[in-house]
Image (cartoon, rainbow, N blue to C red; front, side, top):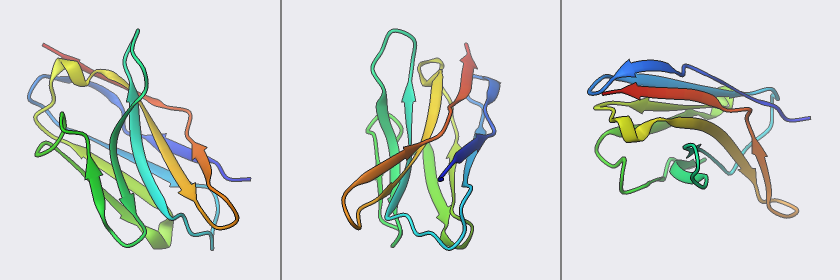
Length: 118
């Protein structure tokens, strides 16, 4: 069974940086895409960034230029470097991983809290 385990959340002041990581519990398993979503209180979950196995990235407009997603395919780990954080970045951040062979299947982590104080 695939499990995604996030780490790295916390409290930071506006303008600061945080780095998130997410490791999949399986070896010799290839995800076609991995990424991060976030959900703030009272809001819907939204895309933050995704990265394919080939390294193609996609970012929400609100984080472009501030956040960087990367992955280590050998370790089935995805990272999110967050710089110039703003209070509106406060949310629970969820790691996700997708496989498409045999049908699309998405896996989710348990979430990690990121709080940016003003």
